[in-house]
Length: 372
Length: 130
Image (cartoon, rainbow over all chains, first blue to last red; front, side, top):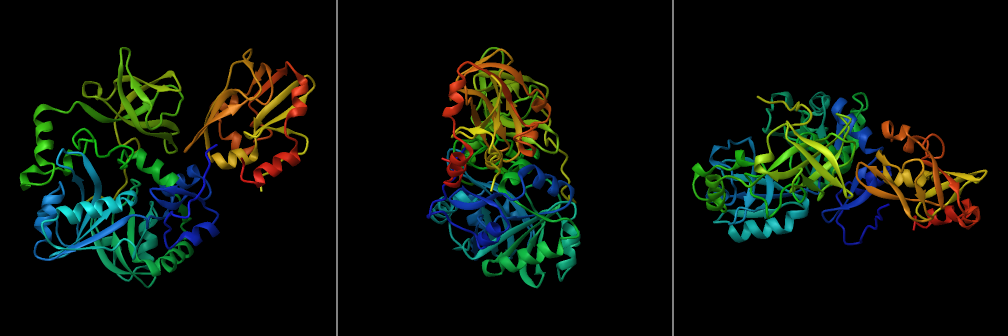
């Protein structure tokens, strides 16, 4: 049994007391004391796939940058092409080190003509802030993490629920687009994004208004079967989509191409930190690839477990779990590039025993995000 | 508060044992399954295997955690709950009943009296489980 000893130094979101009262099990995550589950991970996972779930992800960090040099600064810092981003649009991107390793992955919002917001991983807020402010070629930067709360409403009934409470037409917001408006009377940036593979929204709200918004959504969502969802189900939901998690599947040693993130690396836009290193990998080909793995034998593959074939160690598991939507055991991991094709038979070493596994197509579970 | 049946004995690692003549039935406690969360995999020994008191005899895995299972008592495994391979969630639903794990033919029945009784185990979990 794992011991959970919350430290006084752990940070708390504005919704901490709400979670405790709702019976959440609170655990340390990335320096934060967060709800890992309320009713149970599997039940919460199914609520999001089948109805709608509400997540407190206020631990995520937000930076804003504005001014005439904001665009050029972001172009140099991030891998994606920020010039292609329209006002009202969101872009997934990476911050890389000069050697191509990943500082963090983030979503980038174009709030206005010369005004952007970056949403970064909770555990990386301080590191990222130092990185962007030390390497930015200009722009006025602000770390607004503390005053910004973030709720995710995800699931097939999310749109109906948010539409009912919003003062504008949220159904018109496309995937990876956002609008400003009011939800349940609270001032919100309504983003059609998420980390579950379901349709839904992420709602940025001023921290002092987070509790009112949470309560309004829980109350109004009763008919839709809304449930509070912890980080445990957030992890199984994202794993079924093969979404990478910083610190598990990607980190400062990861080549973005090996992680399958080449689609957000745009060398044609011009110079950016890490460009030369990534391009050199693109030239010679990746040595390893992040693949989706399904266990053939019943066993749970977990972060750090060795992946083998008949001859040798060929890689390592980066994330693994029971997949509630599939009732199977799935994983992600890096394997030698020649073993990455779908169908390749592998083994995962679980407590000294080789358990049969194979490379499978991803996402493991069909995505239902609202594309187009 | 998790239930702690008065007629069982317990380990500080959160297994229970129920004396059945010169055998004992073994599982994990309600407190243990609550702490673990959804159990998704249980690895148990085969019938005929030898287990030793306070040595590991298997593994229970929830979505988030892997935990070793400790044998409360020494002896030979005479029965294994095979249904847990298909329905590991039974450990959550009925930890003291259908969620049992193994039956041990006791090599040293006196060990049973050395286990925690319900009052002592309740005190242990009230103190945070360790």
